Image (tube, rainbow, N blue to C red; front, side, top):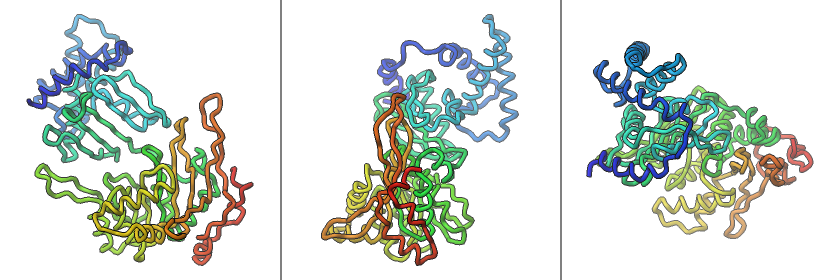
Length: 453
């Protein structure tokens, strides 16, 4: 069965998820003229622009599209107001040179993620909360064409032989697509938008993600070349926090960043950015994070910044930290700082080398100095809930010490999380190392009564 046949067959299933009533001004009111004008554009201009070709003269094409659209609307018996005409032309432009119906969502600065669950159900994330939008595609085939247009310029393909794909848009946004027969709801598209306005540590303080003492402590730890892991769940803001604290790295150091999809944007002058490569259609040519970590050690880095460790590359990362590459930074998925330690043990075992568990724990305890754990709370807010120091081994157990925590006190009547950041009162053991490097952090930052700023 061909892919198009599968999509049409899947249409019968996905129609069950189609909302019964949607605002006409957004979904159904103009679909017919937009679709018809789009076909006219393809016929008049002589090329199917929806196939994802590079458009060198966007302004000229927009003018031609407008002419075709206005000519078509003039011939219709149906009356369109000036506002209706502009809305129809905008939607046609989105079809021709944009990403179809989701184009306005991608342009919306308040939207951080777009999740397309088949052609008739599109969610977005705003301020940490999921919202169902009234936007829809015409059908599965329409959605599939938009997915093709998104990934074609990335040098990727998606079809029955490669039914899922990861990629990165020119603006840095992350894209994941998966199609039938793997996806039972029709074509699935997820876009994690890249913020056009890069956050700074002051923004995190203002948003309540952390406090000034916590920020100053993290700044001292980065400048003092401590090895730091930023942990948390999906969507907790780990990469954003990693990017922000990476700004504390001195500008005279050589930094090598390694990522699956390049998201980090460091402002230092001496930055080398490396990105993994998936296997081709013959399942050859794959370059993994582990390959890049190994290669980066031959590039004379002062700092290694790994976007995320999720497998055997954790072993190479730990060995790099233990062999002179102090001040390395990375992120990892976990539910707590203690869970991050357990996950690192598992990831080291995924390297395929038989290690006694005690040897793995010794590697971790000597390599990792600090775990910064971040969470997305029930109200959508993102908080650094733990800054935890890794002290070493006691018997067979890695000992941890919380330096700062977020003390949650419940939910208020508006559904917002109540609580505050505070110091635990335990003085970090790493302060001696920082003082030896000329970095002084006031003792008052670590007093419990000074924790709520």
